[in-house]
Image (tube, rainbow, N blue to C red):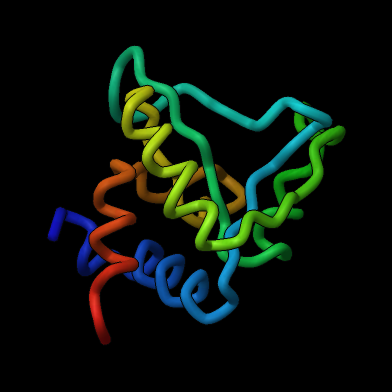
Length: 117
């Protein structure tokens, strides 16, 4: 497993996503929120949250027109993660109101979700 195995924010994301069976992305019509990585040059990050409340916090100011959109975990795993891996996009997990949080490779999310607790 990768460097985030002991990160409490990452583990909270995995645990809550497993329990609820969904994750949330911010969407404005067909546009999904994608930002530039803080950690990696020329890399995009798509943030996801494991609950709607945390996602909703970010729907202000420049992102006021965005709304949280639920994605069933099965579709996230079988479609989104594969496509994001192929596109070289990282995943932001449960970023706080200051946009702090792990930037994770899609395969690390897959591995974490596949772990049996």
